[in-house]
Amino acid sequence: MSEEIAVHPVYKPPKVWRWDKENGGAFANINRPISGATHDKELPVGRHPLQLYSLATPNGVKVTIMIEELLEQGHAGAEYDAWLIKIGEGDQFGSGFVSVNPNSKIPALVDRSGPTPIRIFESGAILMHLAEKFEAFLPHDAASRNACHGCSGKSAALRISAAGLDIFTPTRRQK
Ligand SMILES: N[C@@H](CCC(=O)N[C@@H](CS)C(=O)NCC(=O)O)C(=O)O
Image (cartoon, rainbow, N blue to C red; front, side):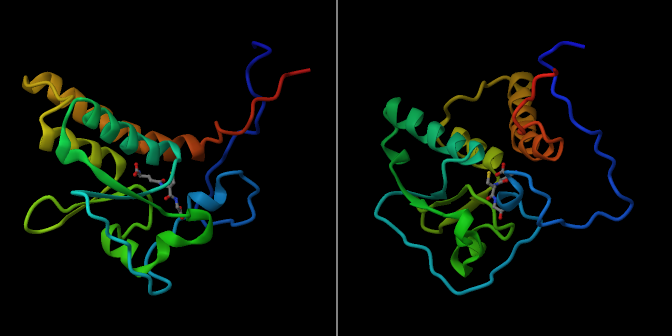
């Protein structure tokens, strides 16, 4: 075994999984298995076509990078207002945020460029919405396009499974 390989006890899932708030994981309080509104709080709305409600976590930052790339390519319709959702303070459980994403997870986007606002949640779905809306970063042939759809699903799901597998715990060197 390489000296670089992390030494962790093997995780054995229990028969009935229960949320252990005190499990000590550094990310335990930002990946909660709960959702829904706990308090009334409207979301702010700015003047730009896209309203982004997010935070600079790996899932959050994907969307910001995409929008910035679209702006860099000259898509004026990608102008946005970015509103901070402090997940450590429970902003994701405010009624306004939950009406955009019932899962109480950042990132969430409201596309207000048309007559009816469109709410989009799940980072992969937001990336796809933007790519399709601006016809950017998506190949035209069906096979390559499908590969992109597959990757976006994985990128959204892997974050969670990676947290579950504890791969974010700093690696300890074997002595
Ligand atoms: N699959 C979702 C995952 C989003 C997610 O896990 N968001 C985390 C931060 S990275 C969050 O909002 N956590 C708040 C909580 O669990 O209470 C996506 O890709 O958008």
